[in-house]
Amino acid sequence: MNRLVVGAHYGLMDWLAQRVTAIVMAVYTLIIFAAALGGAAASREAWHSFMANGFIRYISFLFIVSLCYHAWVGVRDIWMDYLNSAAVRVILHVLTLLALIGYAGWAVQIIWRL
Amino acid sequence: MPEMTKQRPKHLALHQIRLPLAGYASILHRVSGAGLFLMLPLLIWLLQLSLSPNQESAAMFSAVTGNLLVKLILLGLLWAFLHHFCMGIRILLIDIHVGVEKQQAHSSAVAVMVVSLALTLVFGLKLLGAY
Picture (cartoon, rainbow over the protein chains, first blue to last red):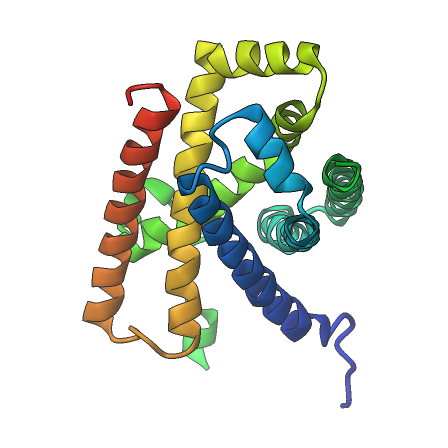
């Protein structure tokens, strides 16, 4: 009997997205760490002017989007692994998604108005 | 097929399960990720305070990060980030078939635990103002 497994195909995409976003965040972390060693966080003024730089804002934006996507896949996996009730799971999926979208908007407006 | 119908445990007796170190490192990857997710609002708020030009934000940033409870939370998040980071690199390497052998996988799990704890100590002392 041919049976279509509902919800197939998103697994590989999310697996790949988890890796790509991880690499983006790891590289960003190393850049910020190197900058901090170079004095980018030595004072509030230095930190502000560093983060206001166009390229840094661009990669900070990529970091924020990567973080939220990465967290979405990871947290959703936790709900899927431990919650048996479909209703509870759906509610928590939606709350997680709404929280992360809000965090993304909040964080992006912090760096984008600099 | 008798093996299909044999008695199986109905639940996992967590206190009886002995995991290899890589198993604990793996669970800590999940725990650290969950902790970072739950504390995201705090981290974004601190980012906002650190970048806001007005004086009240500067004072608020100093007050919040000077609080002992916040320092402890940040110390925990520092470890969580470092463990998640190191374990993430281990996972990416295993994805491309580096360190798949049993002994290598054990060694890399030890390395993740040791390196992330050592870096937490180094950066944690900075966070607590020791140097």
